[in-house]
Amino acid sequence: MRANAVDLLPSAVRDRVLRVRKLSYSARTALGLVLIGAIAAAGAETARMEATERLELAQLAAGRTLAADEARGVLERRIDEESAALAQRHSERERVPLATLLAAAIAPLPEGAFLSRVRCVERAGWMQAEVSVTGADAVLLADALRSLAPMFQITEVTQSIVRFDVPRDQAFELTLVPTEDTDAR
Amino acid sequence: MKSLLTFSSAWTSASFKAPWARGLGPIAIEYRDDVARLAQVEVRSGEVVAAARVAHDPSRPERSAELIGRVLRSNGFQGRACVVGLPFAAARAETMMVDDDDDDSIRAAIEREAPQRFGCAAPQAGFLRLSPPSTVAASTTAGQSLCAPQSGRVEVAAIVADRLMVEALLHPLIDCGILPEAAEPSFVSAARACSRMYRRGADRDRVRLAIDSSLRGAVVMLLVGERIAYCRCIDEIDLLPGAVAECLHDGLPYVAGCGSATEIRLGGARAEDAALSAALEQACGLPVRFDDAQSTIGTAWRAITARVAREDRPWDWAGVLGLSFRRTTRRAMRDASGRLDREAA
Image 1: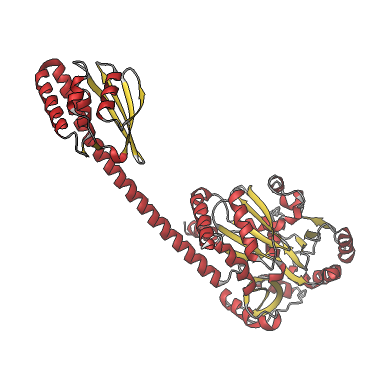
Image 2 (image 1 turned 135 degrees about the horizontal axis):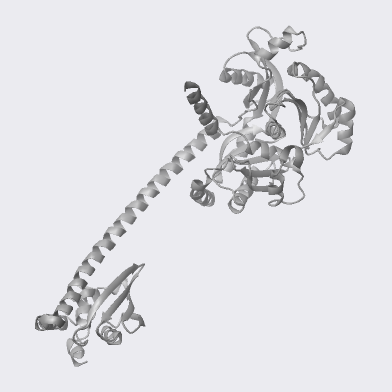
C-alpha cells in the first residue's frame, strides 16, 4: 500500500490558484494571438513593400541593361522625362519612391552602368539600404545620391556598393535638388 | 500598484520558464522553525537541480514569501508550481476512530470533532489510515491488537491544520506568483525521505521508529516500509525519550505481523543532540540513526552543499527533499490511467 499522501491545501487557496492559472492561460493566449497578429501584419507590410520595390528596381535595372545593349535612346528619354518631372517638383515635399530616386541617381553614371542589386532592410525608425552598381564606380553613385537627397546618411562606399541609412519619416518625403544641378554634374 | 508590478514581473519571468520545466517536479518549500528551505528535483533521476534557504519569520509570512520569490528567480528554479511543507505549529496529528466511509466523509467527520479534540476553530483536515482492514483483522485473530476494530469503524491518524495559519502562509506566495499545488505537514515529508532508501521487496515489513523534531516539539512515527503505521505529536521536547518509549509501546498493535522496530531514525532540529540520542537509546533499547548522506539524503546532499550555506546539516534537508519527491496529483492520475490501461490490455 502506498500511503503518506496528505493534502491540507485549503479550498480558498486551491480556488485562487485555479483562478490565477486560468487568468495566466487566457493572458498567454491573448498575448500569443496579439503577437501572431502583429508578426503577420508586419510581415505582410514588409512583403508588400519589398515586392513593390523589387519590381520597380528590377524594371529599372533591366531597362538600364537593355538600354546599354539595344534601346539606349528609349531609356534616355525615359530618364529625361523622369528628371524633368523631378525638376518640376523639386520644391515640393512629397512622397517619392526610392526606385524613382535611384533612377535619377544613376542618370549621370557612365553608359552601360546598372544597379545589379538593391537591398532594403526595415529598422525601427529608419531604413538601411545597400545598392550594388555594375559598370561604374560606386563613388559616382554615392555623389549623385548626396546631391539628390542630402538627408541620406551614406555609411559606406566601396568600389561597387553604396550603403546608406534613410530616416523612416523622410524616406519617401524628400526635397530634391533641381535637375539642372544633376545635369551639370 | 507595487504588489501588482511584483506579481506581474514574477508571473512573466516564471511563465516564460515554464516550457523548459517539463521534466522537473514542483518546487518544494518547507517552513521549519525559523528557516524556509527550497528544493527542486528532476522527476526521473531524482537529481537536485536547485536548492536555497531563506530566513522565515512566522509572524511575517509576507516577508518570507518576498524572499522566496527573490531566490526562486536567482537560483535556477523553474516553473511556478510548488508544494508546501507546513511547520510543526500549523498541523497536529492524533489517532481517531471514525466511521469507515469514503475519504471526504472521513475528512468531514474529523473537521467536526476538531474544535473539541484539537482546539482548532477553523480546521483543515487530512488523515492516514493506520492499518488496512485486512491487517487489523489478521492481528485481531492473532489476539495481539489493542485497537480492536468495531463494525463499520476504522482507526485513522487525523491530521488537522489551522486553516487560517495555512492561508496566511500560502496567500503571500500566490501574491509573488508562486502557485501551491499541495500542502502537507513536514513530518509526512520527513517520513517520505526516511523511506527513500526503502527497498520495496526486502524492506516491505521492516519497522522503524522515526522522530521528526523541531524547536517547538516533535512527531514520532512508526514506519512500516514506506508507510506511516502510527504517529503522535509531542509538545514537550524535554520529555521526548519517555514519550517515545510510550509511543513505541502504544504503536505496537499497528505494526502487528511486521515485527518490532529495529532502529530509531532521528531528524530535524534536535538531531545533533547527543544527550537526547543517548536518552532515546536507553529508553527504547534501539540504536539511533540520523538522516545522513548515507542513509537518507544520498547524493542529493552533494548538490545541496554546492548551492546553500554550509551551516546546514543533512538532516535539516530531509523534510524538503521528501516534499520534493511527493507525487503530484497530475503524475498520480497519469500513473493510475497507465495502470488501468495495462490492466485493460
